[in-house]
Length: 165
View 1 (cartoon, rainbow, N blue to C red):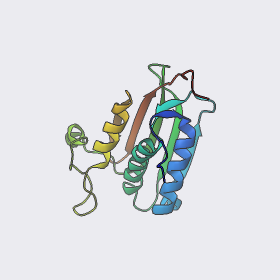
View 2 (cartoon, one colour):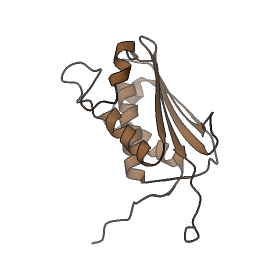
View 3 (cartoon, rainbow, N blue to C red):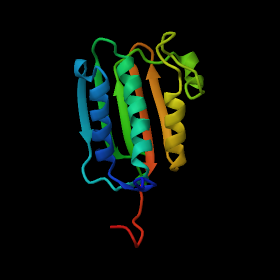
């Protein structure tokens, strides 16, 4: 049996977001928070591996959900990047604990976690960053302790090659 070819192909960002949200619903407490989606229709496609990109999104959604133990608000958006319309972006915002300022410079280090001991191994952001940057994308984090965090992934818009549908 031949494995499916999931190498970098044209993908709809909103489809990847919806798929990632379904995964989180299966494995987490997403039903205890207020979820808002603002997905811009008809965004240009990105050239990514859907499994890797969904893993990056699920990692970020899981961190957001973990930062809101009982309730909170989660906003996930897709749109063109504000600074460069040759990129599209996903923003994930939560009303959780936020990240302390003195920890911000460490959040992408392997095995660094802001979670309580035994609650995480600190690889989610590291892996997500490597995946997104591997596609020529960028990841940005803005956080205020006690108010929440917004993580933005920017991915370059893809152009169809002659042999793609």
